Amino acid sequence: MTYGAMARMFGFGILNVKTFKSQRATGVSIKSLQLYALVFFFRLTSIFRHEGYLPYDKSGDWLYHFIELMSLIFTSAALYGCMVPFKGTYQHDLDRFGEFNVPPGFGAAYLAGPILVVAIFIHPNLNADFLSDVAWTYAMYLESTALIPQLYMFQKQASGVVELLTAHFVAALGFGRLMEFLFWIYSYHELASSTGSRLPGYLALFSQFVQLVLMVDFFWYYYKAVRSATPLVLPTHGGLGIV
Image (cartoon, rainbow, N blue to C red):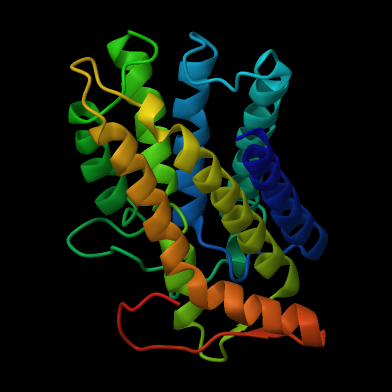
């Protein structure tokens, strides 16, 4: 679990290098950054107050907290860069996931809202504290969908070409999710509800698996680009299909 968190932190570090060095927000989904900011915020509110969801090894003493805090800082910095100093380069016309009957820029609410409801009703009980348990579960479920607006934005690009550092950023997040998925395969049974139901554990596994499935195409084209040292080019689609 700690390795997965480190991969995420590394990914957002790459994104900051890309954004602030080039002084451009092209190819970056603000909606995905908003969702990840919520993920890290809610996770931190849980793990700073209780220990139920921390790694059992020494990294659970302080390292895991530090990594998640740095991830929130990096995410917030990238979000600031895209929304304030480099706002003129942000491609709003491509970052339109979920913009149906909501104000412009609020499409992520279609993911954040329903997932919060699910987390309220289906969550483990390791902290024996309703708010803390729901906060951690919400972060877990929401993270599994947070990349969807970014993948949606990729396929809306006419050329299909993804900037190298942006591709590394998404690949790092995907690798981090893969590491966590492997961890929870062996530990999902610990995510039991107060009634003893293992449904929260099954749902955690399912949500992570769905994210990895959505990223299969991206991983394949990313591997081909890295192997051949060529730009990452994704197929483009006109509909809602994910990369």
